[in-house]
Image (cartoon, rainbow, N blue to C red; front, side, top):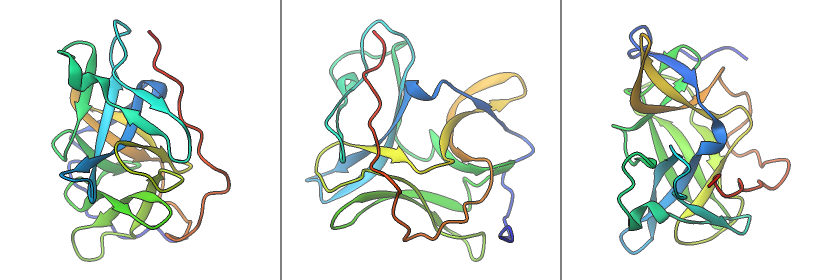
Length: 187
């Protein structure tokens, strides 16, 4: 597959570094009365107390416990484009792609959509694996993960929804198996 043209945004200025994946979850967080949702990313920073609990599967419900206590130094919450962006390989796509949650009849998808003409394809990044309401766990599609933005050796308070290379799957392709929710964060 030919790599689509991409306007590299801040790719040379920032680097992406590995994180412990099981300390992060992607969440479809309801907006208003719940007809729409947005992406939230929760990070378990310390083990003093859990930041969230997941229950069930396909879709897994998320109880964002961090909303009930001062989570400073315990949890991080990334709730908009200031806290997260899309990155494929060495290209920071924060200015040319938007991450959005789209509800369908039988699933909820995290979609990366181009915001400018011809930067690349629309991509399914994660899905809940079933219909549901409230806070729902988004399970990354194969190849997608969370990485931290760095400036030189300094870790920044921004994370990437990251993939090493452009996916070749069609937007409408279904997952091969039902997603399995992560276990509770270590306490």
